[in-house]
Image (cartoon, rainbow, N blue to C red):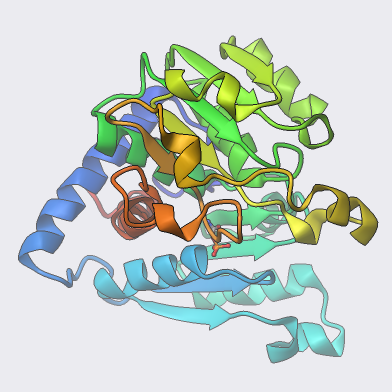
Length: 310
Ligand code: CP
């Protein structure tokens, strides 16, 4: 029972076998959803969604997951809507939601928020993204999506392009990939956007076969998957620093003239202008399917975390 009543804070807390259990459960949920759009496993259960930073996919796919499982959700998307606005401290706010709900899903711009909440709450806490640190459930979706398109993760060549410095999805994905045996991981970024040292150290300790390059055209023909992120504007302390990097890369149809037959582009979304919209309707665009798979995967995760799946 690797998930039952445990907090989901970092993907590094899981083994490959744990993730395979999650992925098989997700396969089963997808099968069930084909027959029936709503299941009743969460009848009588309440999830608290505390999103102190904007979100479309994470918040609404968790909310959809709760509803499709027959549960109910308490959702707050702004401090102004709670007594945090009156000066109540964060710890007491967590205590309240812990007493009202069965599971807490939290997003914050501050690193460590989810772990702090987990130390206070008795109910399981799921990290929906904490600053630039981690976004474990997104990495679970990313790995599941690769498995969905290719039937495996082992042996693939994966390029990761974009804001390697601040994208928490990239940190979590790289940590998740350390549980598998990809052939090669290319980290593609201009020098100013390179991976932070603490992330590089962790993946090298786990022997992830990374090669750092600055240009996509050097490696694109080798790739099975290209994972792209936007520049994480909100993490740049200095707007001038952001202005310098905001247009450093863009994928266009011309970029893709020599890619492999089954090549796929993934992106955690939102995308801004780093992928030309003409790519959206090509066979290479895997990102909308990736976002769609977020619902069954988060349904599976909720069931496992709440000990409701046997
Ligand atoms: N992938 C992701 O975290 O998207 P949102 O910010 O819309 O939740």
